[in-house]
Length: 253
View (tube, rainbow, N blue to C red):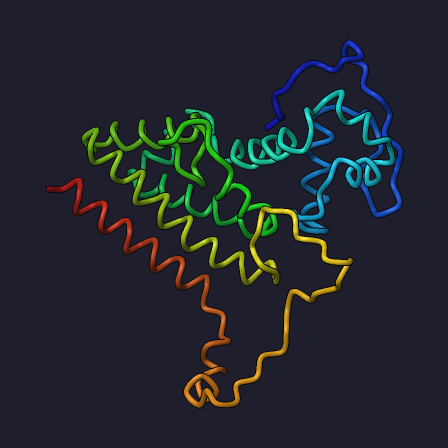
């Protein structure tokens, strides 16, 4: 889904972005949409803390000041990234009805897997979705789009949920997704989850991962092979089924 934003200051004819030196996809017309797309690619490759307007300009092969014609600085850029990501969770009413035709559980299963797919494809960006202030205090990440929440509430109330139970389901569902997926992307990203710029202390090169000695921790040492096994797919499915069973009992009262 395209990112909404102000029209180009050039009257619709954007500025040509040159190919940068770091594998940038930055050829073509410079616009808000292409800038947000490049920013997502930059963060996927390099991580969120190093994203600046100057570095993104270099990545696109243009001067940083050129970007300000389409985005109002880094904060606006971050909002554009979040909006693009969350918009992908909104589906047209016809497809939603087809999904929900098999029951509200089918829609929630689709939505849960769509959010997980987003988190796994963009583990450097998902923490941003989780921590940015939403447009309203009652919008809960990762379902922080009005369109997506409208889909969610409409699907459940159309299929027997009371208003109170639909809101409870929204809160429970978002809490489950946020907690589980933040833990999963922490492993995928291979670095500390932070949306803040790191403190620069003399350009010290501090590695994100360190060797861990298990000396003195006999139980962990003995069970480390089991702890290292990856059961995330099965655990996600089981946890989702447990959640759907809880919601089913809630609406069946």
